[in-house]
Image 1: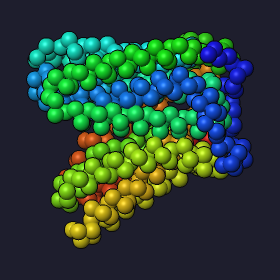
Image 2 (image 1 turned 90 degrees about the vertical axis):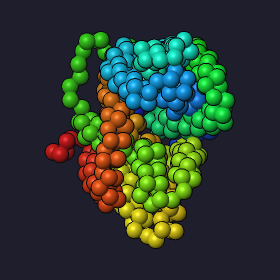
Image 3 (image 1 turned 60 degrees about the vertical axis):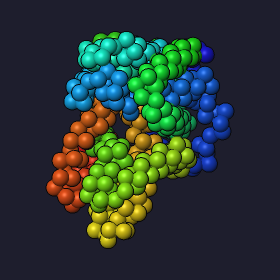
Image 4 (image 1 turned 180 degrees about the vertical axis):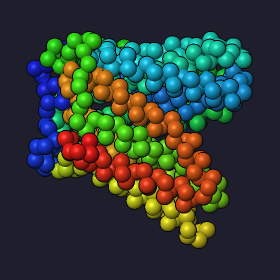
Amino acid sequence: MKTTPQTAAPPGTAAPDSAPPVPPEAVRPRVRDLLRASGGGRYTVALAVDALGNGMLRPFLLLYGVEVLRLSAPRAGAAMTLGVVGGLCATPAVGRLLDRGARSSVVAAAMLIRVLGTLLLLAAPAGGIAPFTAAALFLGIGNQAMPAAHSALVATVSCGRRRDAALAAARSVRNAGMGLGALVTTACLAGGPSALRVLAAATGAGFLLAGTLAASVRVRAGAAATGRPGRRSGPVPGMRALLSANVVYAFCLNVPEIALPLVVVSMLHASPMWAAGIFVTNTVLVVTLQVPVTVRMARFSRHRAMAIGGLVIAVSYLGFLAAATLGRGACAPAVAAVSVLCTLGEIVYAGSAGPLLLELAPPAAVGRALARFQLSTGLGLAVSPVVITTLAAHGAAALWLTLTAVTLPAAYAVGRRPGRPAD
């Protein structure tokens, strides 16, 4: 489909945050409306296929380097880190492309560049650290470019609270696809290196199909939503507070994968099954609740919704600390129960942060704003493992009280309206 500026208000101009709160029933979308606001049926299929491929390969890339290419874990890990850093460094260029009006072409490129990554994995010989590093770089660029490109595309075909619901639906699809892909790979791990090669080939085919479908949608922003390529926008009220807070908020995304397994297994000496159950529960809750919770939060301004998400996350951190003080038999179940609260905070945060950014960003600079937002998210995700493990080495109190101490001010800062002195 071909999208013109007349089909939707440009991002940053629709449904201002200063408008009265919207009743949830006024924005509760039908499936057909949600598909249209998300870019259409073909584009939704492309997202699902892309997420499935990501889930099949992304969590097991290190294992591929070790088991298939016979690399040492430190060398493979270093290559993957370079890939993530390279992907983050590429996001400013992605932002500039988006500000020139590109939408579906950037999404397709983010998918197709990962095809090159999988081809390099398949062609890499045993001990081939150079092709593995190049593959990790291409995969990293695609992974980091995709969120900004997708958000820009959705903002071009929809606006206001419909846009918020569409972004939430895409996150549900992404988590469902990645979870299913991870299950497929887990079931195939018994097949050894040959099975991993087959999965890499299947992932590349999936990326190719997804990229082709995304390119066929043909969405591009019109002249009203773009500016001159080299033009810089002035400071945007509230943007600095949002980006700074987002670095802190992003820590919660790694809590189910890093902090809770570390606490449950290493500190509480409980069965690893508790950690696995917490991760599965987190995925299921995000898939099933992201859209309805985002719609319900429409009664609040986006600033306030994101602040509420931060408050819920901070309270869950204190809950984890309290759970760690219980008797040995009650610790793990208590941590699992509190993890549900943490996931709800994550859902509120994820459903409000991106829409708030799109609301604050000037239409002609939305690409660069999304690139900065992705950089802040990537920075939070990159530093959180070392911060979490370092704090955990000093005990549960050091871990959870520190995370609470940085999350509460972030929630307060982002909850303030633009233009106040604190900004």
